Length: 141
Image 1 (cartoon, rainbow, N blue to C red):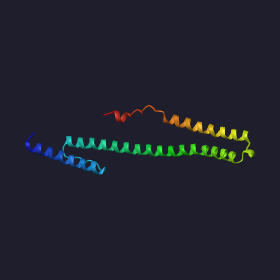
Image 2 (image 1 turned 180 degrees about the vertical axis):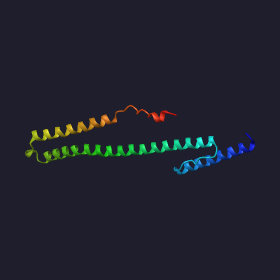
Image 3 (image 1 turned 180 degrees about the horizontal axis):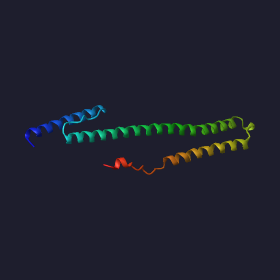
Image 4 (image 1 turned 90 degrees about the horizontal axis):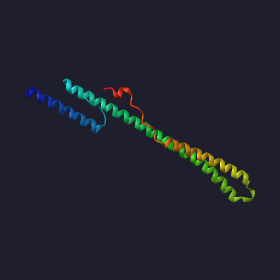
């Protein structure tokens, strides 16, 4: 390798480094392929890594959205039977003589059963799951 070709290679790597720094700062873009086989392979490898990082970011965003929906659904499922029990008990307290105790107990136990069901579903959702196996495409070279 001559001094001139070494300087050229260093200049290419400096340009690639500056381009990658800009991509890191802006969070957008892809490397342009540089002249020469090795710099081009490096640019393709960097672009591949950037693509995988973008895909991971999209997946994590989808997971966060799903968690938000689950949390909202869980809160609704828990609040509804609690509110029903509270209303029944407050009504019984205000009008003890007009309260059908057997009916009140039956409705309250039914609401408690619903609460237990929701809690059990949440427990199952919270259990750790085995990690997904990577696809063959990621394992291959």
